[in-house]
Image 1: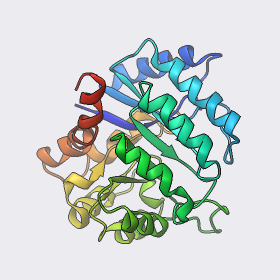
Image 2: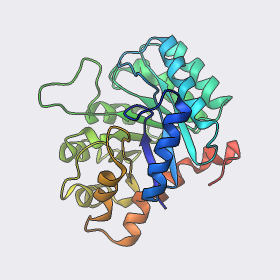
Image 3: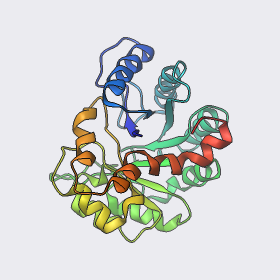
Image 4: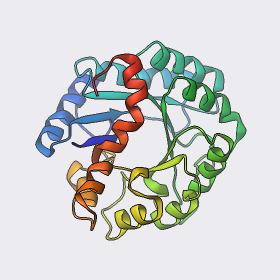
Length: 260
């Protein structure tokens, strides 16, 4: 069972969301990927205005229409526009089919202005994915690091948060969030590197590690390889490939009557 945490409609050809997701599903079939989570539309914006958030979320909603159950969506929000983001959270999650939240690089998540979004998402049982990175040349002004996420996690200790990309510099990222039991890591979106999965399981335990691809920016094959060739037990690989994400999404999937 492979459940992919991290999928995009960008990076693949097609004029419409329907065409793009259909192409990605053919690749998923080839690689044995059972369920896929999509967020953000195309072209995406690093600092989206409210209208752009709605446009991109509409594209994901369109993509999900013919793939109900197999494809899941996270609503794209921005802490720079709290009221608009809360409205999108209601439209796409509370009253719509989406099951999580995607936060990117408009504003660092350590800033407390993000808190109303986190609180409402938690009330809806929506899973929260926060992009994190450590860039050698310095992050963008609003780009969060794993340390920013650790501060957010300390303010919301009962809410599960996903550390996207494990911070890019995964050795530092794993250590930065290690003490925050409510933070899990998303491993998608970097080259397969020897030792990454083994360190993650050793430091965090296998239940805090989630597989994701970052397709179409990356390939299913390269990201699956991170897990499949790691020196881990079959049971640990099963948790990472899908059982952990399924467990974290179970409350909201059950509330929405979606298949598990």
